[in-house]
Length: 403
Image 1 (cartoon, rainbow, N blue to C red):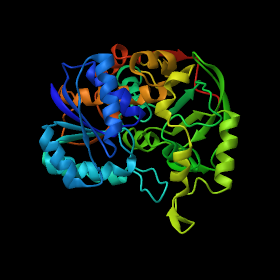
Image 2: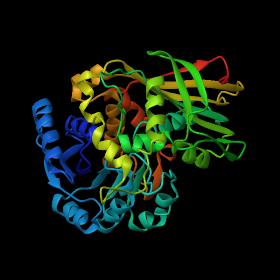
Image 3: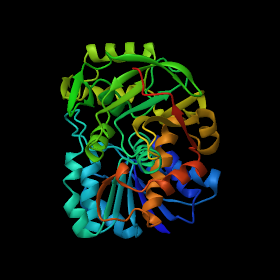
Image 4: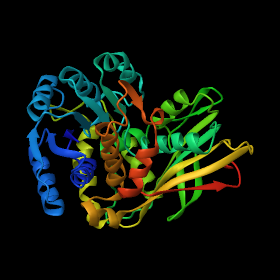
């Protein structure tokens, strides 16, 4: 259906490009670009070996809008799928506007020099994309992404309103590393160590990072400690579903992870401001990233499952009063590796990026403007989750969550 340009060559890109190649009737030609072309070439070789599809590769500095525009025109791409760092969201949106193609990413823009996770920078592009007749899809990963589509599906098929919603993200995977993050270490630690915020009673409530802990029994995994965090879908869900009284995000971490993160923070290794080291200016968290395992290399040794989903409470569509539903996916790390050579965290972000791009190429999501996932029709996306490796299930609970 369309030519696609993917920017970024990390673990998520590895999974997404493999899944695109498995759907050649939608993704007729794929180009993968990154600052480091050798990473693109390695993914291309894997795709050829596993899927038998040739993809093109290119070197690209995504901060240079003119270079991205040239590559778009050279490839004839209809959509740019941004799987690079979130610092590059705005320049890639600029390039899409200049070149006249659609845009999709998996995480909201954040300034490189400040751990600030807000959508207003990207929402400000609404009029420009509308005027250009182009579509920009924000946050087509799992969380954000699938969790927002889950919420929209519940509102379309089960609930007239959502009074409260909790997004729960559990990674029950184990590997042989002393300390490793399950996605980009720099982005992961910036998120985890930021103040926790949740939406309640028409305002944001703030608590110190990693201080509110609850044990929850996750399907397919079992009991795990989960921590209250801030995540960008809380902002978009509370904006687009204004009836929400409370929205929270939870993620599981083991005690060893929390200890390592706290020690690294305490000694200054998670700082995002420049410091001088032997006469050379470095940013500690970026140096730390070079020391930590690459999440994209952990697939072969990671075992266990991930479970991500929503628990939402609201008025039932059938008029039977208030109901609570738990909608989720269980994803097996080893099954993901067998299929595409990725661990489940990369897979659960990369597959929804592919499905979101497919919605644009298939014409389902083509309204000009800038959109979050909960603003879009969920049905074909949900169908593709079931056929593309992320089957979901929904169960009615006895009542609202007690935590």
